[in-house]
Length: 88
Image (cartoon, rainbow, N blue to C red; front, side, top):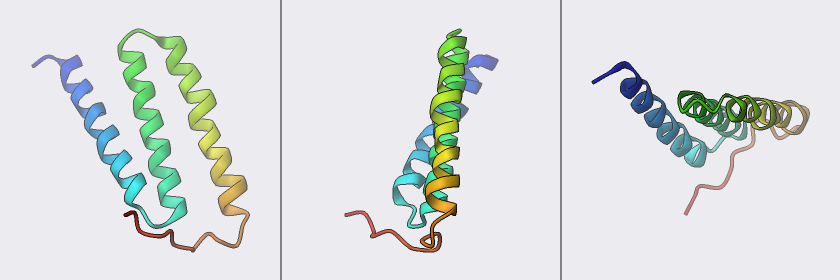
């Protein structure tokens, strides 16, 4: 296997693992962090496909949007330690 294939499979595995963790996590902060990791890995895939503009847009809009979500709607509320209902 070549280097780009290995990087692709690592990024794809990271996307799948962190997406599952963000869905099954019962803590709000952890779910948001896992979603941030998913969006950064998707940006890495865009960069590998030579779509540098889409990778930059992905990082600027979506990944930084999750950071803003963490700061303003999670860390500034009193529900930081609250648990979500388990998925059905």
